[in-house]
Image (tube, rainbow, N blue to C red; front, side, top):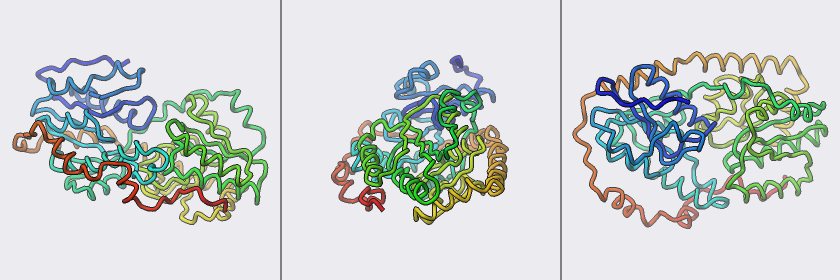
Length: 410
């Protein structure tokens, strides 16, 4: 457990603020990694949150304590996700601010299966624009996210790469689970939340085509939480029933040892996602030396950086043939793995600490902006200006067509 370090007058201050600190996800890893870098460099650095996983609460402080701590000479590193009280509190403080954007799912993917979350995502994307004049620097954890920040109007942007962290994979697998799945069948793996923009229905269609045309002794393993998206899961179950495709397994959330077991027994990692801000499981698969096939959308090509196999053609027969070519040709598989090894090494060679501290020093060297004065009713006025749009019904009227609609068995 990392002890809380009391601020001292002779130490520069760089605090982090975010809505939620979760256990085991990429943002959580990054927040803790940033704190370690800052403290190692001599900064006083605390993590202020609205909520936290119970196992991490001892590492955090309540966001409402922040106004008593932050001064104009301090730096706030604000991880922006969904609209939150923590975010709005940070906005009103006099400190310099660096915003880190991890991307927000476009709400049109969620409206039919989780309308309340769709509304929160819409509000988060809307609220991000309010931070344009507030931030000294806006950072994306991928080039795709940095470009999105530009479209929102941020003029000073850069990329702060994801903290490399594979410690959760460097342990013994669950051997009981591994032995059950290591039975000579071909295991096709996806790791990630069961959520519409991941296009799980495409994975099922690809697997169906592969199983019918190439290999009936195969299974599709979908590892990731579906909590809150039970309606989407029902749609996916209905699709597998209509296709009459057995051996599709929705595993749910797993332990680290179980996750290592799934990577250990898998023959290929298959991703069909249409929207990713980075997609850490791709690099996890690289780390586990598992060949990756992924849809070339949003941040995925930059994350893979020349490793794995990218595709644009979503014809199930084409993807099925691609899976078969990789699984059945060891020389081709090794060539793909070599390219993934090189891409992973490039990722690990990035000096995250130097990059972060360079951005922090850059902000602290800049002249102070005029005092940041926010009226007490600033957010009420902001919400009032947008009140005609803030309903799930209005999002539904204005959304793009739903590309993931499960209305076909083909």
